[in-house]
Image (cartoon, rainbow, N blue to C red; front, side):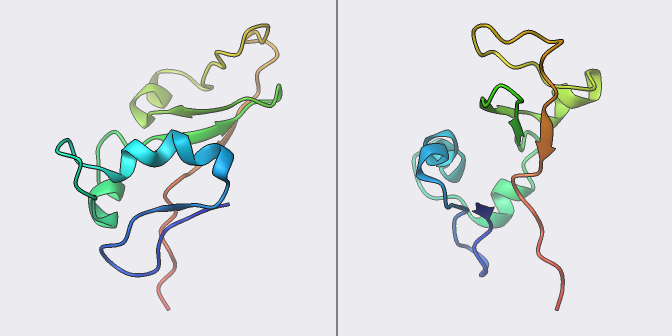
Length: 97
């Protein structure tokens, strides 16, 4: 489960520990200090999480998505013809209440 922290200034929360390592660097600035939620969401290279049919989970930047219909899975043994990734937006904006 991936979700945004409910209050401004908090970091993004990744509920699945096996995926947390993929996102730990995204909550930090270059100097190592924590990033605000808005800084992460408004970044031009905000990545997307993709789930491949082979079970691999990987990140793909939106810039690359403009050039191709599907992201390529880099898992050994998985070819482009077998890959039908499902795009999942990592940073969902909460609906106004």
